[in-house]
Amino acid sequence: MRRLSRRLAALVMLTGIFLVGAAGSALACGGLVTPNGTVSLLKTTTLAAYHDGVEHYVTSFEFAGEGQEVGSIIPLPGVPTDVIRAGDWTLQRLILETQPQPPDVFRAAALAEDSAGGAQVILETKVDALDITVLKGGGGEVGDWAREHGYFLPPDTPEILDFYAERSPIFLAARFNLERAERQGVQTGQGTPVHIAIPTPNPWVPLRILALGRQASELVQADVYLLTDRRPDTLPQAERSRGFDPDQRGLIQEVSEPASRTLLTDLRSDRGMKWLPASGMWLTYIRVNETAANLTHDLAIDASGYGNPSPVAAGYPVADGAASWPVVWTVMAALVAVAILMAVTDPTVRRATAKVFRR
Amino acid sequence: MKLRAAAAAVVLALLVGVTAMTRGSAARANDGTVRITIHYSSFDPDGLAVEPGETVRFVIVNTDPIDHEFILGDQRVQDVHEKGTEAHHAHRPGEVSVPAGETVVTTYTFPKISRSLIFGCHLPGHYAFGMHGTVTIG
Image (cartoon, rainbow over all chains, first blue to last red; front, side):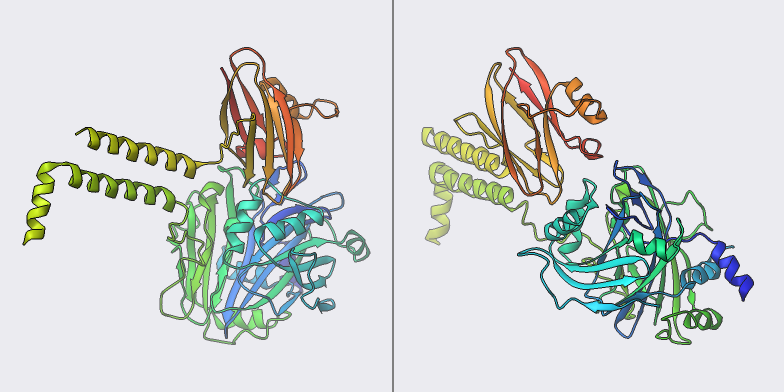
């Protein structure tokens, strides 16, 4: 077991989130935005498990060291009931399964408003050296909160925050507290896994935010693991794997199979994972390997067996036509007006119309 | 026949007018004020035309929750600000910071020759993101 632990520890795993730089020193796995706007490309690993109506989102934040001014913001599909330290090796165990090769005080902040008309602070908690805040608010409000709390926000932040807030106004912001990190001996590059439990009828995994702050041509890479009661349907549908081909772009389904008993037993023995059934779960591993320009959607999951993942949860545009309506209306009105004028002024049309009405 | 032509012209004018309004924030008042809105890290409008020697009062409205800049000048001015090689300087016409959610005003007198200038934001990553526009003089 010790050998296994060493092997696992040797795997440099970071996790999946998105980030927005912050004044602190946290790096959210998935991307790192530094004060000069550059981004370090990092691979992200996330587990999104869904059981009994609760999405269990497990991801890891990597300490970027002192002097690094970055942090992370994750959009969530609902208000979490728990944000706790995750087990030390759940993500690593999933990687081993599919690829060749104590919570601090949790405090509900009584839905106190952060500022008049601004984002509401729903939860505040500490996980090891991480300060975690769950916010409720529109994209602008959450952006204001982040800016006022020293986060560096790349230029695409306003649009991306609105993209998420229109579907779910819940965000989790995380950054390392330098003093605690030093006291706890957190090393640069060391990950802190976090487990977020979110009751929701509609699980999804945010993907678009992984592209935050990146150039259009930059490659976004992430490993997304799903554990569900049934074989899930996703939107967009992942492509069939060409066998871990690094040149294959898009969302690639590398694994889709019943979760083995040994995997579930191992995962259940990790911290905070007792909720996971000992059998009957389906394991899906989707590899994200896409340019930032094309990663304009999220991953919607239908684990009900009805095969109907939500386009809204996937972040696809809803056809309300509001933006284009004025132009459409104008054209239609003009056409009707022209038709009426022709009917009134053209003798041929007038005679034909009169004939019709005489009948 | 004349009536029909006149009616068609009115419809066409309405169509053009309403469409222009819907496209619209190139709001330019008669008093020489140009309103520029910043939304999702983009300028709207991102292009305008002025007369040589004209003095324009720019009202810049930042609707984003992040800070921006409005830097008006030629390519050299843009390069200096993008590379951050210019020493900090006092307020200059056509060069202003636009804090998140705020509106700022700057007045600029354009040169008396026909040419093009650029306005842009040079906070990290913003110009490369596409945050710039053009002013055509003459």
